[in-house]
Amino acid sequence: MRDKIIRINWNKALPLEDAIASDLSNTQGLYYISRVFGNKETSLYLGIATQHNTIRNRLKDHSEHWLNLYRGRIYVRLGHIIYPRNPDASMIEHAESAILYEQKEVFFENTSKTKTYSYTDLYRIENEGDIFELKPKIRMHEQE
Image 1: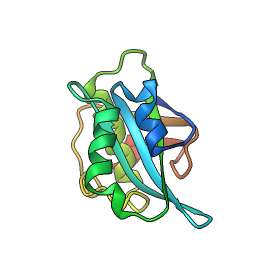
Image 2: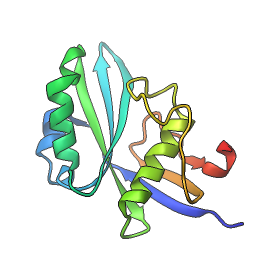
Image 3: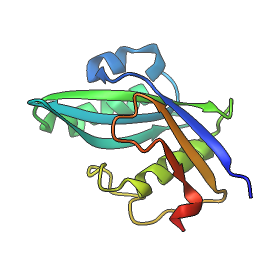
């Protein structure tokens, strides 16, 4: 059985304010929040924006409600699905779910999809670009 592929390109980590101001955040997709405190970077959260929301709106909401509780600098990597070309909300949710389930120990601020998730298709998630602690490949087939 051949895998269906979702390929995500992660942009270089930007300070939170720059990520919010970026034209790239005014879309749907994935985002990866980390913080640098001292000389150590730590992953915090993986999120998505789909349909009637944008990454920018989600980041603004996070910055108002919980990101300001962290000491240090907050950084964001913006993730856009580059294959297939026109991903729908379901595909973005599949990618987020597979990453969170596979890497639950990395994203301790995420509370859902770390123990279980449901899906209709099996995908291979390919992460490229500035992936920091993300695994380059995640096969949903191996999560069963």
